[in-house]
Image (tube, rainbow, N blue to C red; front, side, top):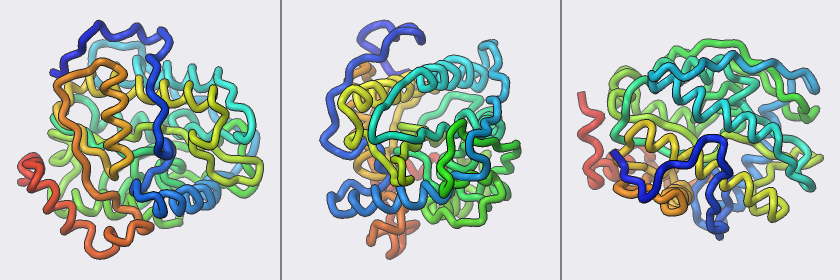
Length: 316
């Protein structure tokens, strides 16, 4: 189990301070500077198209169970519920006008995902950065491309609306007909290697560093570096603390950053949280904005997993 230098802070305690990242904390794509800027623009324009089906009409989050000792119960009650409360009380200021939290408005499919696949400890955690516009932003499932979520993962549940929704950014839930390429590639690989989701989740889990989408008045995506200093600090600290608690709860031994930025964020979060004994590595991000991913992402990642001695967890 990962070692911690000091006792883990109480869930209600203020998150630990985290060094300011030099990279774009909200980017869910490769860390190359030019690609990263494209990601900010593409994710913003797309994240918008993912979210607008009933402005101002929020759906109450599904009831979160009181912790009864099971890992799924604890994940929902000790990590997700406090995170949602903290986010609801935050003020981000300009230029942030819209905050989408799929852990709330898509709480039913998100909880279904947790209960189905996060009910045991995990050797490996695959870490993305933030909700894709046609994936998790729509349905609460990391890399949640519709067909993968419906057909491969078998996730069910109603999806509501953010309390404040941009008129151009519709949330349509599990019926979203826009393709989330990153999610299609990510889950397509595991379907090919593992055949069933149970085989993948036997030793692994996948989640994002930040489960929120931030947008400006025009619907443009905003990453933490584009926020006021105070707002950036509080959201990075909150997300870093969430990740550390998740790693400890699941007794993760290896964190695999999906893209270089996620790798760096994981290292900083673990260092700030005093969590030791966790190996942090990276694989190529499946985004179509990454030219290398368009030349055979599956083959490249299988090679990386082999070199990292991780493929053994996913063979039949």
